[in-house]
Image 1 (cartoon, rainbow, N blue to C red):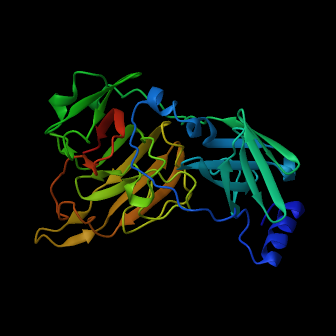
Image 2 (cartoon, rainbow, N blue to C red):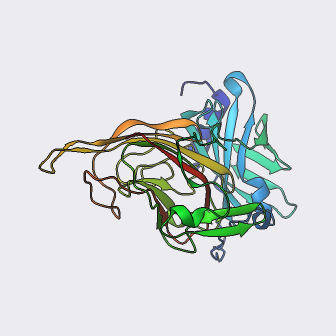
Length: 338
């Protein structure tokens, strides 16, 4: 660990000495969980867990901490603590420690285990000797305006049917946005070779779901290579999680923001090259920024993603994949480089 946090290591060692996992709570009878899938922020805010989940920062210097609090439904949470700050903003990712927390009868959320304790209430997280404050990060490219020569695939309500093979708006309390959950997977009518692209997405509130069942979608480049969209907030960051090139590359850092926060992908894509006989002589390449941070830097795309078109020399559309979850998209534009 690059930053020294003696007290953090002491509590982890103390927990290990007891034979219990850090932050483990007493086992209780499993509660029944039903699927919750909410796209509207006003509706999500009615769940008391929504106000607790999110990102927290506190301390300074070598004692600076970041925390990601993940709602697991029914008043239960997973809490990830990082030395140095939050992922993409100073966190020493090797320092990550995971704990469990639960809502108490008095409304507080208590993290408690052998040698460690913390309390979350009113936008503050008191963890050992440090008080962390809740923050909401915003991508530096959020709301990026398309250049004059860009192909705008979706900018505002009313233009979605002009640029996609199908598409439908989902009307929410804060606007109308492009959805795939009511139409199935959609593809742009225009096809692209080399391009740069910008798009924004907002994950649904699905606290009772886990893994690939939690706000699942994907962006297929040329309808061939998928950059995964998923509620992977606080997870390790694998190739099947948010920002992953599905089945090929995990993101360099998991930059997934909490559900119901607008996020961005900024993509620079170069297609594969084929000779006159149709043989591939050069792999496609891509650089992707997730919420302004490079998560893939000019990586080679070795093959098409399962479920996509076969690799070939022809241009291809942008695909937004549907898995039945009500996340939404907006501000999608592409600048062709051919």
